[in-house]
Image 1 (cartoon, rainbow, N blue to C red):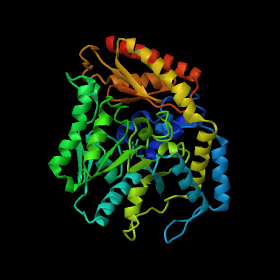
Image 2 (cartoon, rainbow, N blue to C red):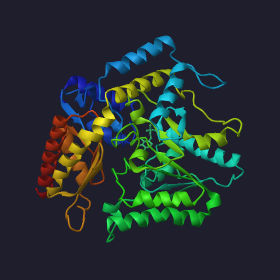
Image 3 (cartoon, rainbow, N blue to C red):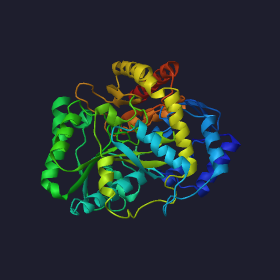
Length: 454
Ligand SMILES: *Cc1c(COP(=O)(O)O)cnc(C)c1O
């Protein structure tokens, strides 16, 4: 973003001289310099140019309760003064992590009563991989190592996380995936369903799991991991037939099921977890993002009692992080969950604001550029196409990026995944703010269409 503001230019110079940004083309970023976000409140951000921007992505899917809640800052300050750090290794614990584990087990699905804490979602999935293999080794089935995941799923950016994820552009850098991880098709009907109906395609995609289990041999398969709704892949809401068929397959074979709830967890679907929304019965759930509303880093793995019963017989689990269950992060997470519960935010999403958002978003389906609008809860996707009937894209035009740039320029953050625009606003977004979001989105679709025709 070019600027005449000396303060902005100074920060951009610092970026050029010293900062390596995640998921960025370092050289290209130097040309324009990054947009500098300086403050935030509610669902809005402000940049160093003084622009006010409606954050349709809740940061990176995480700021559930919105920005600027002093209670979280106060909880962090209080904990920092009391006990800023202590580790959980060597048979030690501290009050905030214990209280947090209890509170999470209260809101998690039945039987999920234990939590292993990490510093991020990626670390949660690394923990999952090691725990799954440890579990089967304890049960005398050490060959049950392979984890089945899905193409275009997202499970983080550590070596294990990126391997579990199905992003080919991530695999291409650094010889991923690591051995013992394999991917099946994703339930992305709009992009990959061809001539099948969504219902047929959902069954087909789910059956890929059974085929893969049979191909590998069930004695070699440890777990299947999936996001209830794929987030970073493009807010992919599976056809209605998908999860019921997956559940049948999981019931038939002796493997573990891991729900990656890093995005869906903590209310985003209008239920506490995506697994509640789809009636899934995971053995493990990865969490992060909404756990602290992003105010401080924290992730974890919620583990079912049945799995814990086996782990209890396995001696030491030789795994953990210096910051596992960090007391300040735990105190912030506790306060975040208290607010979600006391202010009945998840309930309000379910009853009122998500139905409204979904209704208003679907009005965009009449726009000439829009092939499909889909979503669940506070998640939405808008497919941009050249031909609505055939779902044909504008090849090679970078439509998504064009639209994203217009959004930025017009005070709205919508993310582009290829030519799919996605949103995931803070759960506290009001109806009036939803109106503003949809109005701005339509305006940016108009600008994008005009740019394509111009
Ligand atoms: C963001 C994300 C992760 C990784 O979390 P980090 O905190 O970035 O490591 C894992 N799984 C899903 C579904 C995510 O969206």
